Image (cartoon, rainbow, N blue to C red):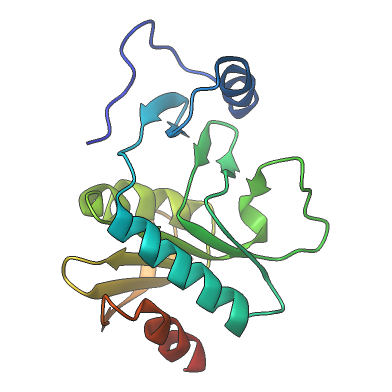
Amino acid sequence: MVSALTSGMHRMTADEYFAVAAATGRERTELIEGFVYDMSPEHLLHARIVMALAQSLADLRPDLGVVPSVSVRLDELTVLEPDAVAYSTADARDDAPLDADRVRILVEVSVSTMTRDTDMKMSIYANAGIPDYWVVIPKSGILLRYTDPTEGGYETVREHAFDVDDPASLVRFLLAG
């Protein structure tokens, strides 16, 4: 479960967040509306699916850069750590977080975070204009694909079933159509 850090909790900007993270080595956190949140530990199922999806995206979209786990700056007070991102490489900096306007496809794998990923994060990503947001739910073998961002949500949500043992087949299906 995600919980705000309560000891000395205060709001900070994205720049302050990066400075604190660099100075303390604190990992597995996200900055949401100026507050630092702990992230859940990563499980093997989660890692396997992230790797398969990222590799499939890279193979099928050679026009984009694809990485698992990168900091994405959505605004001055919000920096999230999605599981995989396909992004425009034009003018992308290797020494900085990825700016939201470069993101083309963003993936969250929800082993234990479905409510947060389909509610709070979905709204944040829509407000930032992320054009294609995927929430992969391994326990159900379901992928929710959100497209056409609007203020506070997405106009289009499609549900796709997939084989948890072959998540790459889902990427091939989604990008073919």
